[in-house]
Amino acid sequence: MKQFFMMIMVGLLLIVLPGCDNGDEGGNSSGGTEAAPPSSGTSTVSLSAFSDFSCTSNWTNRDGALGLSAGSGSGTCTTTFSGESGTYNLSLIVQTEFDGRSPYQVSINGNVVSSGTYPLSSPLGCDCPLDNWMTVCPDQIVTLNGGVHQINKGDTITFYGEETYPCGSHGAYAKWHGMNFTP
Image 1 (cartoon, rainbow, N blue to C red):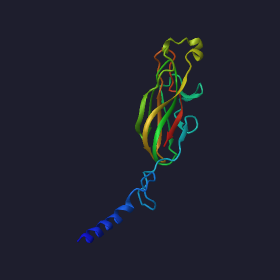
Image 2 (cartoon, rainbow, N blue to C red):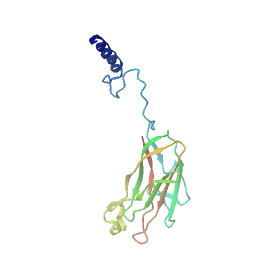
Image 3 (tube, one colour):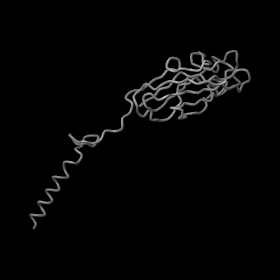
Image 4 (cartoon, helix red, strand yellow):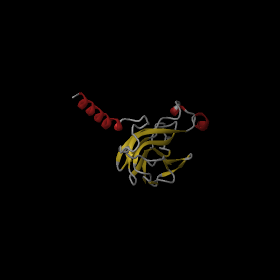
């Protein structure tokens, strides 16, 4: 009877031991058939506001960024995602101004995935002297985190921007440079 239990124990050990972790990172013994993790994009996809998006006619080059023409209200820019399907962190590269906080939205296939208002480039705001604003309160290029999203090759990416005039006749024009999608 004792030998019978010993044979069962040895048999169980032979069944259990091959499935144990061999110490390699990832926890898969060589030759295993563990499922691969969900696919994700393999490299960062950078999209330029100037060259990768088709925009409404009221966008123009403003101080090195794509911005709305004065008095035009709002506008959109659209592109098709050319990267591999996967999960990406969206980064929006904007150019802030001292005289307004432009509202913005980023949509994927018509669904808003990120929205807000730009920060001010200077705490002086409307008190910045207009005669030398470029040295006292210059625009700042900043990256806004748009969150992590599943994006598929061919999805429609849309940027919406709106101008604002809190300082009277001069304001902010939703200036932006582009978007990065990092796996």
